Length: 236
Image 1: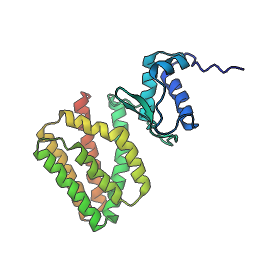
Image 2 (image 1 turned 30 degrees about the vertical axis):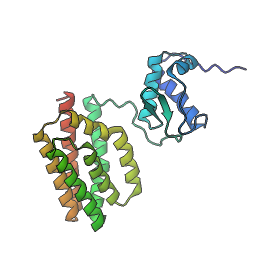
Image 3 (image 1 turned 90 degrees about the vertical axis):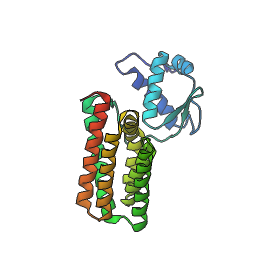
Image 4 (image 1 turned 180 degrees about the horizontal axis):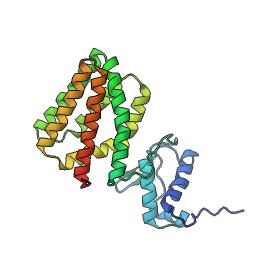
């Protein structure tokens, strides 16, 4: 009996194609580092257009299973199905932005509060070093995107819970990086100064060992990020 691999027409064609490719990856048909078939080959295999294949690859990129290299194609970077995914998120939609910020706020504020309780002197010094790195970037008329992300990573490391680190890494790769880049492309010095004031408040609360203030400072920072992102996207 010959198995027909062509996907039947339906309302979520790209999702169906992504699901088929995902199954190939997680079943071992494609190993980490392998190059996926070309768009043309996948189009022929599943009986769909190349734009649908491209959209399906985008879904797999969002899920952290593949990465694309310009001019070379898509490559497998992870072979294990992620236990958690952000499905159907549209960061140009006001409600989606609000929902994602709520999730970020829950994770990051809790991690920041724990960091205030548990951080070592060495970890506090690492957080402070990244705080100064952000300011140096701002003083050089740079957005400080990488320095900002490193600041938050040091805080999550200091919370002492590896699962927070895993979740934070997931959110960073899927959401937080978008927020930072949106800021980098549009914000002016006045807003960058506001961002740094929020960072300083977070650091001071951690330095003082005050988890309640650390939580509040992190929440305020994420609300500020939501407002800045919404302004950048024209949602306000």
